[in-house]
Image 1 (cartoon, helix red, strand yellow):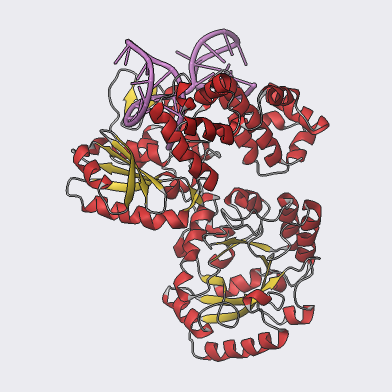
Image 2 (image 1 turned 135 degrees about the horizontal axis):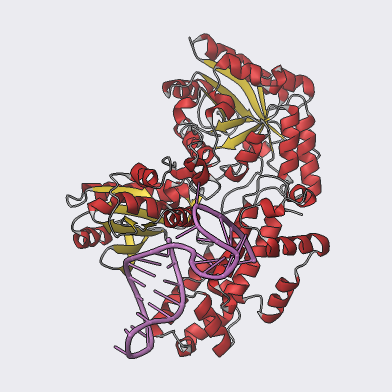
Length: 572
DNA sequence: GCCGTTTTCGGCCCGACTGTTTTCAGTCG
């Protein structure tokens, strides 16, 4: 039984109860329990077997019983009953912006709308406006949003949104009436995907700032415009929110709009227990006096907490850790000593070995592992064993020209369908570093896929498991793997796991970093660069590793060259 | 439904914007 599967089930129960108009706190309890399971860093089966379900915060007697029932019978009576009452298409309705649980229910009860198709028909014919609480205008909004829901999940790659956010931010900072401006939201938290761009600005004249903001060339359409807030759609369709507050409120607003929502809920609960009230403008004592805070650190300080880095504000224990003064020092770009996993023109890269090495050295790194594709990766110009030997000679020549910088001869070796690596052992043994990656047959059944990866890990020449899930964000799910088993095997074998910084990958997923580190697994933060200009993808990897609470000590390529080499599985 | 340095019962985060319900509910973040 997978934690993610049970999490989905609880999520569904919560949404169905919400649709029925159940007590909102009960609804939230299910959502909280679902999130707790999604963040569980160990096998759910072990937790169940050891009777530790109720030790998970957010899981009490009732939900624990339901999880046990699900484990035993594969179903939960409450869920079956709810599914019997509510047609399956109805939950999709709630995903349409403008239609929440209440209106969706009203539409279902008055017009029998039970799917996106029904909704479209009703909206187009004008009948949707007959639903109590809905009017002409809302019906039009819903019709417009419906298309987007169908076309896209509403998540954008952080890498697509970030440049736009930076341009908007630069424009805001040039505005003479803006005192301060920052990016908030999922971008500030280093999420891999975001549903919008969130910006916060401080100004004594919010109206004027908003006027200029909505007139910026990046803004394609204005969705909403109030006294302090505007929602717009940018070129390309990405929504953006700007909130303008009085300068004194800026630290509170920045904190609030950075989120996550779960983190903020946790923080406000803590404030309340301390007799304080926190909102996006201020921190109030019971007697109505204000607690002054000059910056975000002071806001956390006033609640008895260390400042919490934005990346980890996901309600995964960071508030408690900050209260106990035991937040980890998260890894930083400056901690990295070497760059692993770059491609060159020898396979599908765009630059020479020398050019990549020069670029890495110019960025301050001490070593670089060239890892071109192996022979089976024909689509990417994979190297036959003979070419690999020639490449080693070329690397030797390049190294002769360097002092205090070393190029290593590595390879990104395909993990074949049966779990063998793409070269015989004698070829693998001749390399300095082997990253083994899944590139094909990503649709294998779970058991078979897991066995495949476990077999690859058994190969003594595998040093690093590359982009372990093989996912491509917003395009395809990764391989279906029992990740706990993969982590156990990697820990046992001394294999490191990659945190791939390609903005489409960001894989190993940050939600697994803690579970990897607990097992003593080292993480390799790699750019997977195909040219000098994408060496900076390590920054994405750093962001996502910070999100996973990764410290310098856990990072393989934060080691100086000699220690790095000793830490490799092949040299142990 | 969960939870407990004021509580095993009575709380549970809070405010902006929109449209329509003419005084506020629903949605969103």
